[in-house]
Length: 180
Image 1 (tube, helix red, strand yellow):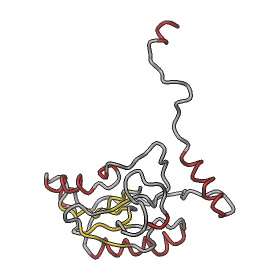
Image 2: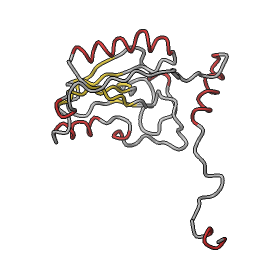
Image 3: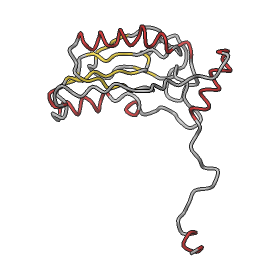
Image 4: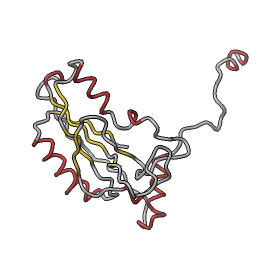
């Protein structure tokens, strides 16, 4: 049996998942917030079934990616963390063409992630393809930018309210959140 176990080609013992949640929690504490970040965990989460099939639904895309801001430092793939590129208000932009959005303002593991493929963190191209194939009814003409302000209170009381209003204004039935 021992010989068979050797054939399984296990990875090296130290090759384990990166503890992102722990890292982020302690990172917030080092920023001066006094205590580790508390992840939102609710006792119950409301479920709203679709009112119509996806093939008949309009879909809105929500992203935490920031619009490119010339003059705010390196924002390209592989850029170091760039707080100057953050945005603090909900925004919308056209889905026409290829919007220039970036994620240098997001606290991600830059040692193991380069963010070179926009399609992995901003699925607009895939949603356009799904609409063209008839797998979703349509795609809203604008995507929505959701700030990453590090404040659950602001996110819930201000940003979520604005985002919902924008989704309702364009009469979307479904929203896809691509949190970076």
